[in-house]
Amino acid sequence: SFEIALARSALTLQVPAGRSILEVVREHGIDMPSSCEQGACGTCMVTVIEGEPDHQDVYLNDSEKRSGSRMMTCVSRARSPRLVLDL
Ligand code: FES
Image 1 (cartoon, rainbow, N blue to C red):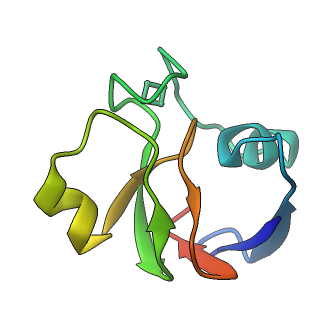
Image 2 (tube, rainbow, N blue to C red; image 1 turned 180 degrees about the vertical axis):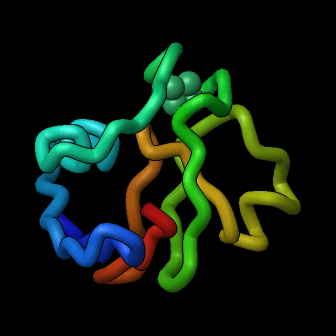
């Protein structure tokens, strides 16, 4: 599992194995759009303020993935213990 801190919502949440960031934030009342939920469409993208995403999507290109400034919340996870997201 890893921790996500939601900068605009002042919430810190745990994302356990087997659950997505998208599921966890929605459970806490954050209204996140999604469509494919398979990392392909870009609808569920968020800005990453701090931390290193573990990209599992096929939407971002390699340089976008390396920059780590945005991620897909339906499939991608964290390489660092904590991500700070612009949510
Ligand atoms: Fe399509 Fe996440 S909902 S990339």
